[in-house]
Length: 624
Image (tube, rainbow, N blue to C red):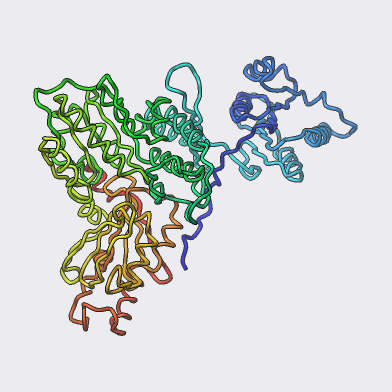
């Protein structure tokens, strides 16, 4: 098995919680004040050790006088040595460190170039470093990288966007690993400038939601099946996708156990964190948070306000003026990138809509095209709650249309390709509305193209099939049998990747009639057409392990399975169905099997089990 080779030169970026810990800062310049402030914001106690406190910078003296930190004059520490000043300093420092419980970090700042302090010599800094190392205390020595166990990143901490100076839990840090500190500061500023100003508030709202999600609801019945084990309670677990299936909510919700309830709520928080725009998260009220976690049926309000009647929808903007006659538009938003919206879809969103009811998969870049005066609601169709949320979404559309509004039901991709368009059309007709369907470009067609995969290719793939990896109410679906000259596209199945691969390769008569060869190429395309698109190329035999090793998944994802996956790689391979293939409809021929394994080796490389490509084609990214 081949895994990525480590390339040294990076830092192990960690975030420390320093409550009840002590940080010792050696020096008293403005740099020392900066280190002290960082430690204070992390919740630690700070001691500043310096020669002659009266010469310390104004900030340190002010913080000391206000009890925020402790200023200690080195010369006042007890010493029994009559040796040189440097040796006495080292002796007193050793004694002070040993008598200071909870000391975890030492920052030596009086080695800084250009400091107004008397600069510490390299020999003195080395001795301090060695002393601390013997006591297992980590050291940062300014301007001397070889005497550093850790370094400081260029940090920005976000405020609450209200202007009262209250900081949130969100921090962004950038490091160049010593290659350019000034450049790190610039990069940090540019990154921060590109993030929504309310992103810190969004983090606080999600944090509040997570706390509430883990609170018990008082259900104490034991689990009634083995699937209700303890997992996914914390987002830091090894589970890498927010789309991992959870048990659908029981019609009798009071029978839900504590564990089932907590798992459901935490999974819904993960869904909200992954899909909803930052601006919508920042605007959440406590009532809306409770509604998200409860997932209760709609309560009809006497005011007739649709935003109050459907708690599984998130109202974020005010309702536009009513039209003389209400109507409903089913609109496809395409694969994700806003440049791939059809002109009709763009007109519907920017000129026609009074209310937009959006699926959670529609990216923020598309939602930002909608005028601020138009109300936008994000559906809470989460695992275990999709059917109930779908029904309430349709009811909300009818309620608004009856008030004379133009309602846009915005769906990812094309509404008619696994988008539930059919059931919505029939439902709206029953309510005396004949919806207009505006097609969208399906990710089933565009995703492979963005990943360099042709769905059909002469000499490789004569046809393709698009199917779903998720059946109704989470049941398994019947997958098509293997055909050498056919490409299989599986939507909405990455969260069940192991089950899909087992079904394809096992040849179980209940699922497929002809097993797929384990060496068959597969590509998983995540966030197709978006700047953070990622494609994992492998074989059916190794794709599950590949996904376990590439880190957190980036939904939505899709699978492309077949020989077309490697057809255009490098110099290309369009001879899969060529004259040398004895029987291109089977995979059992020994000679053909050997040829295919050679194809795989040429494509991935000898000893390589998968390949990962990040981002879009450079030219596409530059043009659009």
